[in-house]
Image (cartoon, rainbow, N blue to C red; front, side, top):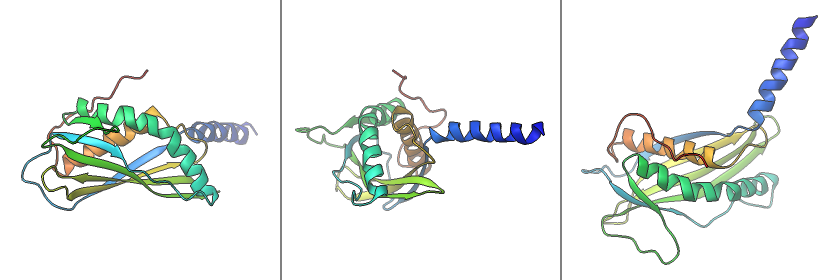
Length: 183
């Protein structure tokens, strides 16, 4: 009699824990192989939104809006701490010579009562010289409940972007990741 109650309690505790989590996964593809690694990048968010006409788009946009300040602060900082000099694009900024461009843009939002919410963004890296795309990555973010869309998610995204850029031989570096200190 005590075992089913214990299993239900453990299951409820696990569900409550997972309800606040946002899992991220980054997959990438090299479009144009480079002969040299990239050492400087400007990061920008492309204007766009998820379709707000349905629940998935509405929730997705709300969560993206929560995540945006953390992306702006932490992605360039985390990239810089791991060997890729990075800064956030701000109004009036100009691209420095030799600075590649990493664009983050919303792609899709879905919601299902059994699987929760999934948001997809695309990262596109353009080379500094010709301004052509050389690399793309799809960033999938999923949550079963009301995940915390903040610094932790931005750090997960930055970490996985660095891992993929290293694996695809676009940036130098190896070893453990360094992340921006928590506030």
